[in-house]
Amino acid sequence: MQNSAAVPDLAHTHARPVHWLATATAMAAVVAAAGFVQPDAATASQQGSESRTVTAPAPAPDPAGVELPLECGAVESVVTRRATGDLDGDGSPETVVAARCDAGSGTPPSGVYVLAAGRDTAARVVATLVQPAEKLSVGSLAVRDGAITATLLGYSSPDVPSCCPDKRESVEWRWQGGKFVRSAQPAARSM
Image 1 (cartoon, rainbow, N blue to C red):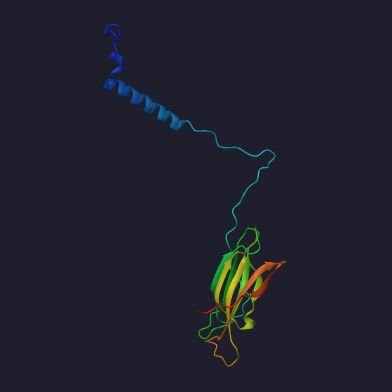
Image 2 (cartoon, one colour; image 1 turned 90 degrees about the vertical axis):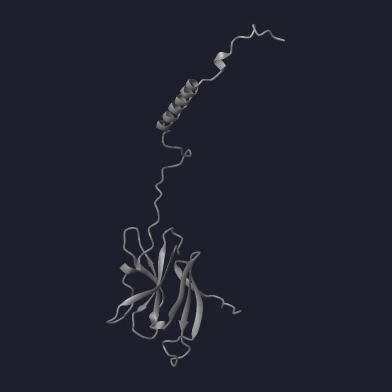
């Protein structure tokens, strides 16, 4: 057993409010100083790599500024469907539009056009996928996985009223060998 006279006085181990206040002030000073000290900007690079500038792709072309090859006479043309996506794998999106003359009645034939914009040029028509002379209209239009898909509506004979197309074909175009190649899609099964 130890003699209490041999044990030193441990009065300094009892914290008083002034000690807590001094500790809190010191910690606040350290945290505040850390907020003012910022690391240098990161400059890491792989050995042998050259500096490259990465630019965001240009936005998809807007069909409003493009003159479409439609002959509408006294009426204006109207874009009825629109889809965008990278069709040729160059990293820049193209816009695909279905457009027709804005006739007052019936179902005027549509044209399907691919629009692209160069780095220094305005948007322009780079491909015509469906000519209005084919007398087709477009029921749906989409761009997925680099392919254009559409539902084309047509007529089985000249006797079918222009308001009511009676033929339906699902088609797809893909960029192959420097041009768009059209293929028919399998018909959807009815349930």
